[in-house]
Figure 1 (spheres, rainbow, N blue to C red):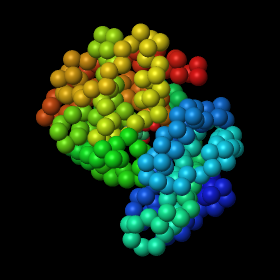
Figure 2 (figure 1 turned 135 degrees about the horizontal axis):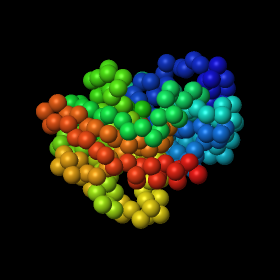
Figure 3 (figure 1 turned 90 degrees about the horizontal axis):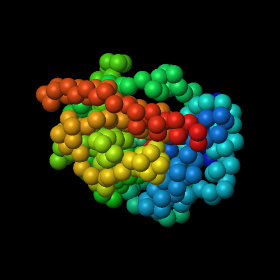
Amino acid sequence: LNVWINGRNRSTLDYRDRGLQYGDGIFETMRVRRRGIRLLDLHLERLYKGCGQLRIRAPDPLLLRRELERIAARRIEGVLKLIVTRGCGPRGYRPAVRERATRIATLHALPRATPDDAAKAVRLRVCATRLSTNPSLAGLKTLNRLDSVLARAEWSDARIWEGLMRDVDGNWVCGTMSNLFVRRGRDLLTPPIDRCGVAGVMRRWILQNAGSLRLHPVERRIRWDDLRSAEEVFMSNAVVGIRSVRTIEGARLGKLRFIGADTAQQLRSLLDRQ
Ligand SMILES: Cc1ncc(COP(=O)(O)O)c(C=O)c1O
């Protein structure tokens, strides 16, 4: 059984857990590579920041790190997901302050096609579902992911890798499970995650390392015209890394094609050397 709840190998959860009752918690999805966790420090940083912002009593950092490393060592390659909820409490939204956080770790095989196809550019479609705006939660990877669930339910064609999502004002923000990057010349644009979206760990790594490839990272709102004039578009997340985009298909907006993929390739090489 590849499930650990509060460090114990079991799979059942108390129905009173606030993670289930209210989505009161956060999670991290991490890539296991060579029996270790890629970008673990960045994942832990985001997790503890999230716990702080939501005032969830976070698990002891040393205990958590050791537990995650021990679980990751069971697979050469894979995915390790960690959920931290506020824990169990009485009915009602009000947190009681003394809840004890629940941590749920699960270990999975890599999604099929992840390693082989890393360099293959993918097809994107445009989603009709908009992202909910909430500056208090923007950036955090909370358990409330219904925008992504609705958006991902919009298509079933397995040849479409990801759906691109807009905020309520029509700015392009992210994919259902990934962050968006647009390159024009040496400028590397990515939307600010200040009103909605997840501040991806891979996004952060890219922003930190763009300079070493002589790229100039710019956080700003992205419109359809920015996508139309892009030389290269790619998506990122912690599990797949960096994926070049070949086409974006929007029913009424038309279809965009991208030929460039060199920056994504360079970033992937740099990431592989991590
Ligand atoms: C909506 C959304 N944006 C971005 C990301 C990428 O985040 P990370 O790089 O931490 O995997 C995810 C990951 O699942 C996501 O669901």
